[in-house]
Amino acid sequence: MSPNSFVFVVSRITHYLENIAGFTRGILLLLVFQAGAEAQILNPPPVLDQVEPVTRQVERGVERVTERVEQRVRERAQDALETVDTQSVTENLDPLLALPRQLPILDLNGATAFVDVEVEDGWRAVDRQWLVMLQPGELPSLQQPDIEILDQTDFADLGLSLLRFRVPDQLNSRDALRQVLPAPLVDRLDRNHIYNPQNAAAPDASPETAPRRPVCDRPLKIGMVDTAIQTDHPAFVSSTIIERSFLEEQIEQPHAHGTAVAGLLVAEDGKLPPRLPQATLYNASVFYARTQYAQGATMMHLVRGLNWLVQQDVSVVNLSLAGPDNRILAAVIARLTNQGKVIVAAAGNQGPAAPPLYPAAYDGVIAATAVDGKQRIYRWANRGDHVDFAAHGVSVLTARSGGVFGRESGTSMAAPVVSAFAACELLANGGRVSEAMQALANKAVDLGDAGRDSVFGYGLLQ
Image 1 (cartoon, helix red, strand yellow):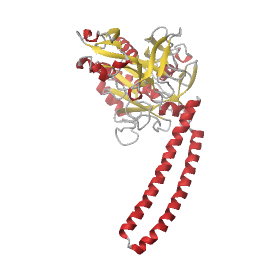
Image 2 (cartoon, one colour):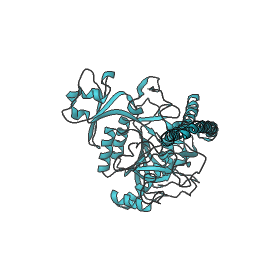
Image 3 (tube, rainbow, N blue to C red):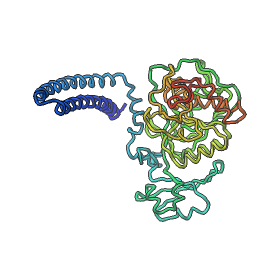
Image 4 (cartoon, rainbow, N blue to C red):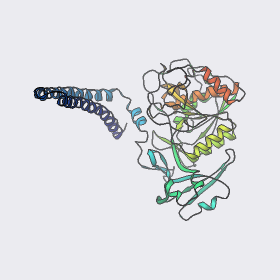
């Protein structure tokens, strides 16, 4: 853990606990002042003479209480620092914090392929790059001196044509583009946003302990969009994995996250039977390395990967990633679900009070959340009415890059389990999505409030 990350953890915990102390002090003083004010109104002058010494006595009591609270704050902060999983805190409180506002992404020759930058609302995107869903006859509107057209790609299987362009700083906002482009065009464009995997360091407490068994033992196709997979891992000797990279050739491809996700679908080991032993797994590799521990996937790479998976005729697509709402992503997901594809996405690891993340929050997407071995919700899992199912995703054993096995946590790890169940039910119900989803809801173990709720959805698939 870097010194900056450690300082961040200390400051967040201390700040949080100090706020509690300040709040307590304020409430007590408010009560004192309110009591004094009421005494001045309700009591005759002889009684008023007694109010001031009583008030001073109460204030001294407030000071003693405040001292005890502040002492407890310091003790709690120390206890928290000694026991908290600091890597998980750093990643989940603000997984982008460790990144500079501008991060050049270098190719294998050391040249800058593109720049990963912070944009509105703390999200990240490729610097000054925008995407627009182009309709016939609209290209001339974009052929302007200040707009650099980078490429135009027709995604026939998704039914859209996507144009990627770059603008100078003065045009680098939706409002600015609205001044120079037709309104219908602006409504169909968005930034080339960057999306993140949804995994974190595995805590030691409450690992998955239930024996793992195949969900179904029938041939099927299933897809995932992720990092590359270490296909020569011993766990995949008997697996059928077809992989294609959609990154530029000279950009480094990480493979840790994709290996872990694939391990939860098709890996086989003495202690780790595959959930889908007869499946053919198609992986679209779209994530690039930001740092040693962080990866990113641009919107354009995601679209390319999803289009390829449609061409492979997969039944279910696993997306163990999350990020902002994006017009391009929303349109692509809608086209996929209209084609009868089942999309399973990680609900996200931003915490119970965080707003919804995407694509999990889009209509028609199955949002997967994570529970631990005691069926308790993962502490960093996003919540909301869009959550559909829970699966074990805390300290779960899976394949790791380097040819080893280890434990991983996060809604990223729950999503492939839900994907496995969805693929099997879809096959069992003749490809009828609504019937397959109803069968899944019937199989789920209801947790939390009776019926579907914003924490566990319909319940646990196990």
